[in-house]
Image 1 (cartoon, rainbow, N blue to C red):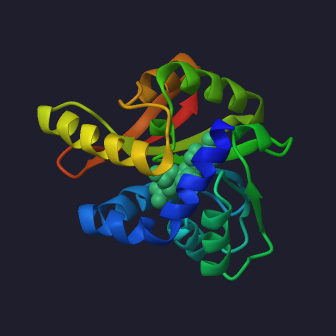
Image 2 (cartoon, rainbow, N blue to C red):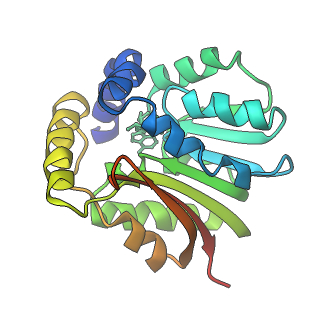
Length: 209
Ligand SMILES: C[S@@+](CC[C@H](N)C(=O)[O-])C[C@H]1O[C@@H](n2cnc3c(N)ncnc32)[C@H](O)[C@@H]1O
């Protein structure tokens, strides 16, 4: 029921998502998401969760046209846009669903961009727990998301959460401790890069061996 509401919300937002993100952040969201794509190899098996309307997918396929990808998003409209934008490539498996609908595979790369911020701390812990059986032991987890380290970050986030709450019905109103949640799940940040005066962070995580 809750997921149906969220899915409908993102369906409504889908046609405007990229344009409105660009109006607010310019190309920064895309630049941040592309920054660590060089960590991916042609032989990888990639899971993209909450992939959205497909901008990152285009960049990824440009660098690795044949890499195998499972592309999961709760919104059929987002999936449709991603599929069309990328000419329905046969090495991409588009899945309308959530972390509960991930095919029973293990992945050597997981990409969560502006996805971990959709949950409250408690749900995020559950979501990451659900993902763990799908992680190869040498997995590379690429996460790009907001961080809240300055007063203006908090104010900005407050406005964005208010907007997303109204439009999509997401369940949280504050940024969860997504970095802490990944660390708690046994991941370790290897490298990172900040964008937009420190408001956006792209990180590469690996499992602590
Ligand atoms: C803020 S958008 C980010 C989209 C894309 N990653 C980007 O950065 O452009 C969040 C995306 O996650 C999807 N989404 C929301 N909740 C989800 C869930 N539980 N499982 C999978 N996708 C979800 C939405 O439909 C939306 O496409």
